[in-house]
Length: 219
Image: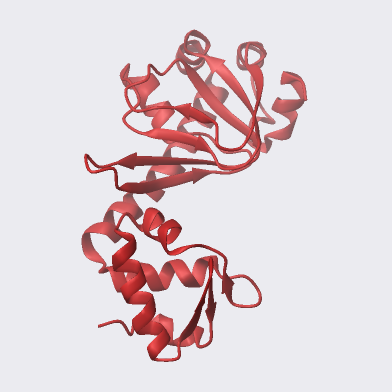
């Protein structure tokens, strides 16, 4: 996919002005395999990221090494931390990892700044994407601050279950998603299993009574 095709792919860029189009043509296409670390905590932020395909997770770690998932970037998404760092001239405060093979375009910092200053259409695209992702981060802060682990675990299971009611994740993976310890998740899941709300298996959780998860049953 060329940079011209990239512009055509994003519906929000349909009315892109001439200067914005010229700036986006400076974007460099990259292909990265799954598990590639795209940026680390403390890295310099030098490009605006536009994801064409695949999925990237952005996470932070505690001093003890515990992970907390901040958000994911999916197809045709942008990275709120990248935008924030570019605007504030800051280094990355978190880590970005390719969960799958990804294809992305990287717009240099200089072109990003020119876009903000001189291209109304591209500036609108950048800030609309930023606002959408920022709202998701605020929701995460609210969940961590005001919801207990039972509520967050129940919501996670309901969200990640497939059509057969199966969540294909390990206890450790769920713990990483929710920013807590594996032992906490294992204990909560075992309590739910004892109530016949779910069945535990190796690397999977099968929901028997999804409706019960609307009202967390853990003690």
